[in-house]
Every structure is written in C-alpha cells, then in structure tokens.
Image (cartoon, rainbow over all chains, first blue to last red; front, side, top):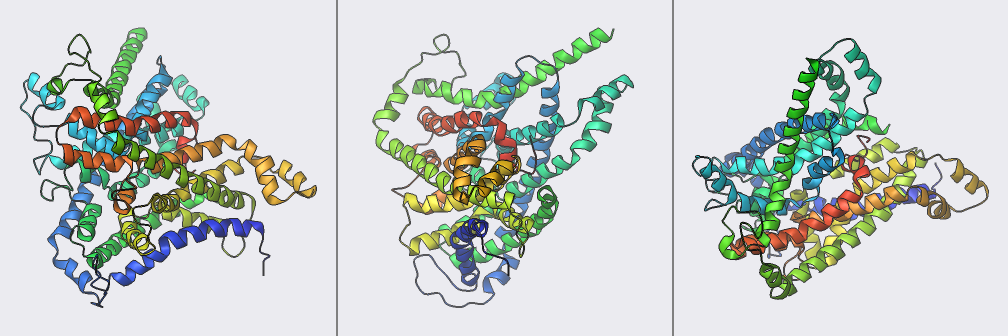
Length: 287
Length: 282
C-alpha cells in the first residue's frame, strides 16, 4: 500500500472537483435518457430505449449530423492551409513582423458570439458592407444568411476568421523549432524554397500539424455559438442546425430533456471515439 | 537576376501579409467605425471620419446612459464570473500540476491522470449543459454567478493543470529538495520557492482561464436568465431584440472583445502551450 501523501491530496482535490461538478450530473443524464424526463415536470417515467430507437427515423438528427460534418469538412482544411501560409509568410524577412503577428492573433481572443455579431453586421443583406462592395465591383448581392445553401458557407467564413490564427500560431511555433542549419544546408545545396519546404519543413512539422488537425476537428464538431447566434438558431430552417444546436433545441425549446439526453449520449459516444484516438497520440507528449 | 527574383518574392510576401492583415483587422475596425457613425450613415461605406462621414459619440452615450444598467450588469457578471472561475481553476490546477510534475503515482500512472484531464477538455459542452442545468436547478443556484463560476472552473481546469505541470517540469528540482531537507512543508515550498519562479506561467494561466470564461456562451446561456447573464448573452440577445441598430450592437460587441484582446496580448508567450495544453511547445 503506497503512502497517501500531500501529492495524492493535490490530485484528488482536482479530480474530485470535476467528478462532483460534471461526472455525477452526467451519470444522472444517462438515467434520464431512459425516461420521459421533461423540463418542469417532477415525474420521470421509465420509457426504456424509446428515444434511442426514435433516432433511427429522425430526419433532423440526420440533418444535424450532415450539417456538422459539412461545416467541419469545409472549415478545418481551410483553417489549417491558411495557417500554414501565414506561418510561412511570417518566417520571411519582413519589416514590422511583430506588429503583423499581433494583428493575426486578434481573432483568437474574441468571443465566438462577438464574431457572429460581426458577421451579422458585415454580411447584412440589405446594404451591409460586404454586399455593398460586391455591388460596386459589379457583382450581385449574395443572400449570406437567408439562403439555406449559402448560410453554411457564411458560418464557415466566420469560423475560419476566428480559428485560422490558432492554426497559424501553432504552425509557426513548430516551424521556428526547426534548426536553422537544416535550411542553410538545403540552400547551399541549391534547393528552391518550395523544395526546402516540402522535404525539410513539412516532414518535421507533420506531427504538430496532426495535433492541430485533431484539436480543430474535435472543436468544430461541437460548434454552437456562431451558427446559433449568426443565423437565428441554426437557420434558415435547419440549414445550419448542428448537433449541438439540435440537442439544445430539443432540451430547452421542446423541453423534452429525456430525448435530448439520449441524443447527447449518442453524440458523446461519437466524440469519445475520436477523442480516444487523439488521446493515444497526445499521451506521448506527457510520458 | 537573382536580385530581381528576390525583390519580386518580397513584394508578393508584403502583398499577402497586407491582405491577411486586412482580413483579420477590417471586421473589428468596421465595428469601431460603425459605433461612431450616425444611424443614418450606418449603411454607407465611408470609413474615414470627418472626411466621409460626421463622427458622433451619441451612440456611446446612449449605451453608457440609457442602457447603462443592463450593460453594466453584464460587465460586472462577466468580470466576477471570470475572476471567480479563474481563481478556482488556477489554485486547483497549480496543486494538481505540481503533483503531476514532481511525483510518480503508482496505482494510476501520471500519464493516465493526464489523459483523464485531456479527455475532459474534449467533452461536448452541450452534453454537459443539460445535467448542469438540472444540477443547478435542484440545488437552487440557477441564475446565480456562483453556478457559472463552478461550471467554468470545471470546464477550464484541465488547461490549468496541464499548463502548470509544464511550467513546473521546466524548472530544476534542486532548490525544492534542499528546502525539504531543511524541513519546510510542501505548501511552504510551493508558495515560497516554486511559485515565484513560475509566476509568469501562473499569471498566464489565470489570464487564459479568465478569457475563456469571459468568452464562453453556452453554459452561461443555459444557466442564467435575468440576474447572472454575461456579456456574450447580452450580445446574443441584442441581435434578436434590437434588430438592425448596428451602431448600438457594435458598442456592446467592442465592450466584450477589447478586454480579452488586451489581456491576450500580454500572455502571447504562453498561448501556444496554453491552447494546446502543453502538447506543442513554443
């Protein structure tokens, strides 16, 4: 039996705090997902796996899955690619490097809701600045938020604005960790800067790039704030209704907590699978 | 000839850098401009005050006087909730981070404890929001600052634990060991010897968790209504409540984004390890 030391109590406090605040209530939710739990109703009657089997024929569930994956598949690659371009630019000899780097970091600290509001102002269809500029250039106005086809792209645009700086910053840190001698050697050997990038930089930063990719995938799957506020709760219709928004509406607009709990758990399992792959990767940083 | 090529390359570089700067800066700049425009000018493209439009401070005055009560309430709530959750997360995170950096746990390995905190970071907030709502409702904390503080502290604790562990790992143990030999208690060693050395990291963790809490929307939205609402909620509700009065909205937006931008710039050095929880080092 190992001795119980102060170190044990330090860990125990943090672990116990999270268990009491988060894990216990979540365990209750698992129970709730098998009952007709409703907001404002004290009775909870057992309904078994009804809400789980209901999901099979629930077109809004499929829609939310589809929307979530569409947003993720569009936003994440753009963010990572732009982040890489920006990081490469910042490694060039340019004046006011620190100033530009600071500008690139601005979105990182903005609340997503504030970003959505900015989108509201900039993409306003009846005379907002983006459409006005388009008109001046001879293009027609674009229904940024009222068209169910374009609205997801508007959400992606806001997400890209908000998260490219994250990808940029981490990529830059990884690139700056590459020893200078490697570059000098390849320049002496007469390699072009693209060749240097492809055969020296890219292999050396592939590991941090995958880490960025997983962080971004796992965070974009959970996206809520921007589509919720920018396009009126996942609108128009359900065009930008992501998983998180769908669950929110089932819980707090329809008040059917039992059903929401069941969908949450399905969502949770999905995320747990991706997370466990990711954590396997991350663990070696902490060994 | 290579000189020409290089000059061409550097021109392209500058153009791209300027384009990206515009992409990231113009949206925020536009909010500032619109906040000093008269309502009648809000849909014009002019962006040079005095030359293209007559600037006014009337909107700021209206937000600061007529809407002051609600704006101030949101500002106070955001500040108190941010400070409260940052204090809890930083204290618990410092202790757990220190234990993880300095002690080899036997039954459950350190890396497993770390994985536990990491996996918490990736839990979907919406799956927690429902049980949180229920928990806070049943203990009578719904719509209080304390409810949001407790929840935010739990949500951002994993960052604090892992970043502090990183900070402790990076300093030598020699001084602590000699202090232990002199008979100092562990809390004394932490507060008197280790914390002064990692003070910058400690400040960064505090500022980061404060900003996360300040910007968080979903939990605060679900757990509060009339009393404890924070700035992001004030903004989200303004969108539906006041429609296209963008000159007023822009001011609320600026109040919400300026403090975290300033704070974030102070801890630039720690952002990389802060945001990736120590998985990528700057």
